[in-house]
Length: 538
Image (tube, rainbow, N blue to C red):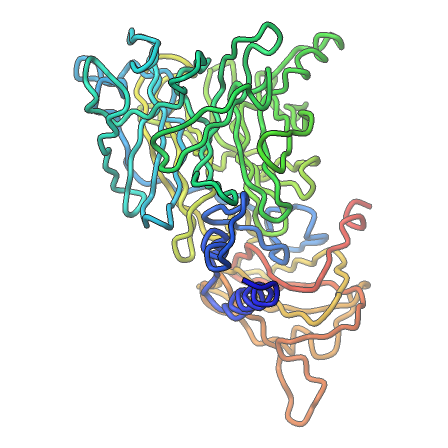
């Protein structure tokens, strides 16, 4: 396809995105766009939430001033029951009970647009089961299993028939080890990530990562990548692409900057702690790659600090490019009680991370007698869009970390863009953004719940003086619950300079001000504005 046609297609897609202004947010599907273009790319995730002109209230620096409004973290609402449970011996079912599982079902759940079905790779780890540790038999104590679903809630476990378990191939175990090599996974067949993949001339559709051992006196272990056409039969690439690193890691795709993001615990960080005389703790380190094989050095980007309890370790973080920033699903480990839960982080540059929501759980553990009472871990994949909500999946366990108990896979939902909101009650709340530099015509779209109240918007100059035509008194009220509500200002008859919803400010610096009564604001979307972030830090 010619370059001109490609550009036209991209413009058509962007126009479609812009046109969906009210209550119909677009689910960007880079996979389908690339297929339409007739090309391929390594960076073709089935879905991405990245929208550079969508500003989340999860970013604590976007709002400079607030009056009579509170900023609140919004937790994921759980489905009442787990959706994938252990049923077979290779899933940890022993003597009719699944009380021997060491970890939650660490998992990956992806929508496959080609087959129009959800696919799940989930890890069942039971070190009390004695299994042969060589091909073609299942690994000692662990199995990565495969399931499919039409809706992400009702799952089936198809027979994969690739691994012998107890003398039979009638199981849903997936093998990542390569038959022609002597390699073996350090954590058996535990897959930490699966992401869509596409390279010109390659038939592979999926890439996975595992923490693997390698027969080398210097680099004895590390993160290895595996490739597959169908997600069931895998080829492991050796040597590991990130040697020595990798126990507990996550791989994400950044389609905006066309790069892969790997987070794990840095081997070098442990060496530095020993040199500095510091107590080593689990932490978050980040590396980047264009091609999965050549990586930047691991850089520590997030550690427990004085605002955390003394026993806090940062166990794992999966990164989601979302809106104008990056959302981090941070798995927090408290070693005193050996329990884990999920918190929320945010960064705009992948180096400086905000601990969002006063470090309260984004995903809470269940009650004391619940199946997920001690350990919850969100799956290593972006949430899936469901209308005006997003669906997440998570592994849960009833026992403290690495102790025998019950484990399964659960699910839950959250409002689209709804990680954090600014909320006001009957007394009107007012929130004002940091300065914004305009680079062209713009408009304002709000993700707002005003089902029992109303919201007004206003545009001011940098000093906070309302701009003619964009004052609160010019704004038509927004009422109801909307994930994309277009702000309209009054248009006067015969007034060619009325603002309406299409505003020009000639490159000046402005602010947005929002008035909330019995309402919650989750995000605003406004093209051709650049927040002056450096001003926010002064």
